[in-house]
Image 1 (cartoon, rainbow, N blue to C red):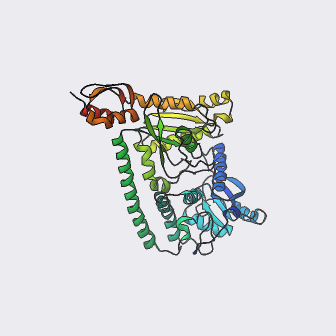
Image 2 (cartoon, helix red, strand yellow):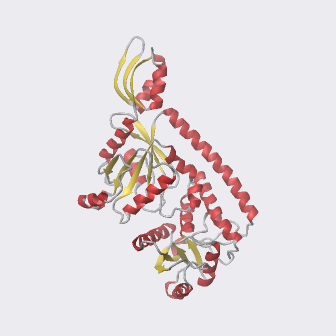
Image 3 (cartoon, rainbow, N blue to C red):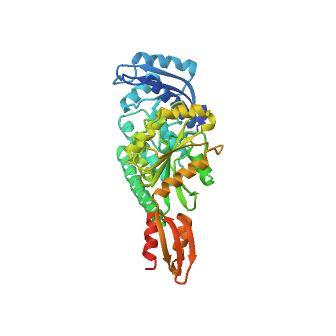
Length: 430
């Protein structure tokens, strides 16, 4: 969580953290406790050990420290026993508050945003992912460097990966120059991604974006539906780079499933902006497959968090299927009881599944096929033999009910995605 002027070889597993949060007026205590549990998982994913946590009730944040002076002094006194290296705040800290807390606690201090950014820095594999993470980190770092945060005494660890390990005495001009260069690179990424989507659109296959809370099981479900071989880990934000695989539809044809970055409460605005190129996969998809971990104690809250992010992306109105995942961890009555209290209005189908055990995958595949079929167009034409590629495309991406070879061409009946149906109609014999 700390930074140094020179890259340092640090064993992240040896880093100990203490988690803190403020319960302000209007904040639900159970929701806040859930956020702290999530912070524990975030810290674990970052490679740290959580040695303690505390929630402080306050009427309003302290302008200088965010938390109360007395409570901060109490936390400092715990360092001798708990031996924590870093304090992690659930609440966003201003550069001034972060700097003051570091001095008062004589330890590193990061907030939830920096912790998430650190995890992203560890998990980004593609060039695109690394660029997006670095942009987000530099946007977060800039006001802290300008604000005079004492970087010189901080060591390596969480919050320092990615650009944090570079020379930290960089001035505003160099950071902004670097950001301009990275933004240009991201612009190219967006153009390339738009070209990929355009090629997919010409290919006419329907696209389905997998969305959901982080660690809900999206990658596992993608593997189960497509045998895609995507790495699936029991960690938050194991997937950052979009992965697309083809899935066979019931009755014939196929669609493209794209795994996307998981959502989380209080998703840092820097990440939303930096990962716009990735999130465009959600915006441009024909439909959504929302994967929900029904076994999680905060499943209802996670569902609403995803709804909020989709609303912000203006994607909540798309046709959507809800895959209620990890039903193998609960009995059927409990699954039903939990679902009874959820907002299921955005979904045309709800399918209970276990991606790991394979339960309900047939029902889910049928649900996806039904929703996609509703957008298909009927085809009943004679195609000249010179357009056999369209017949092959209909077999691959649509549904062929009958196929008969005649003197003038191939008489096909079935249904196809709109773009393919238009191409077939244009090529058909009069």
